[in-house]
Length: 401
Image (tube, rainbow, N blue to C red):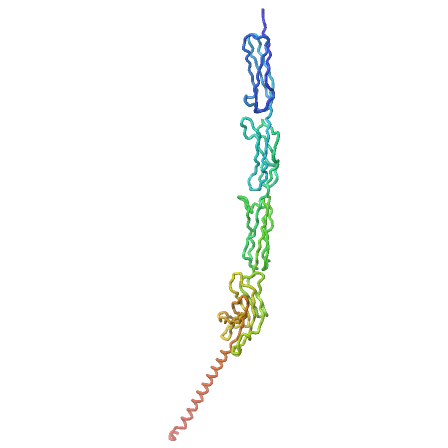
């Protein structure tokens, strides 16, 4: 009598749909009509290699029973699906930056990953992926591990970089009318490694060649740049004038030497100077010119007010002299070394004063007197010589005649 083996049934026990990172291995169950005392051992084979943490996807599972004395071998194939693990991303709210020449990134955090997976998520910005120059960049969440899927993102979805302030200043200078140098520009605020060569258009200082003496507020023009916000700092500048002149005629001019501000003035007018001198002085001297000089303030260097009086009628000689007279009537003789043909150099008080030029006739009188005396002596000598000759002829003896 022949007894045939029976074909048992085998099934897989466990969830056929699981999530990455939390895999629970499947079990098997062999069903037989009656136990024959044999071991009903089974085996399971997966289509993935990592039995601990299989990757996301659809996989094949094969359960096998090799048979026993009374039961035939049996095998069953089924599929198991490992879903991607959901992950959340929280982007830092600190998404505002100022340009510094380096790439900017946002901090972020994720919910728990499986078994210490690293770099599951990264962020890129805008179209090019990086954010360096000023602008608004969309935040792109990139999944680097195919076993995860982003289910929610919290926080800003934009990174903003603003221009960095660049302070533009005009360097000060001692500005003198018609002597000014072109203004130089200085910067404060360039990021490390950058200078004005990184600007699309550089700021320009105003042209100073036409500046007259006075007070000015000047500012550089704004430049052009994708990365810098220009802040042009105004400069308060005083333009001075070198020397001030005043004329009373085509042949008479007074020049105050030095550097003066735009409000400084020199005023000159002719005066009658006889009131300053005695009759004895005016009888032997002829006043050829007298002027009141007023300079509104001292030069910027704080030194004395030096004035040059130009007059083609001034001649350097023993007969030419000059006085400076202050407001109190005190007279100071101007050194003859300060008198040249056509000009006199003098120091003027801050509260004004007078310059008086005169011709001294005393020397002429003395010269005439000396000449008269010499002529008189010559005449007397000639007369005495002639008289002695006559006496000598009368006293000779007749025999000598």
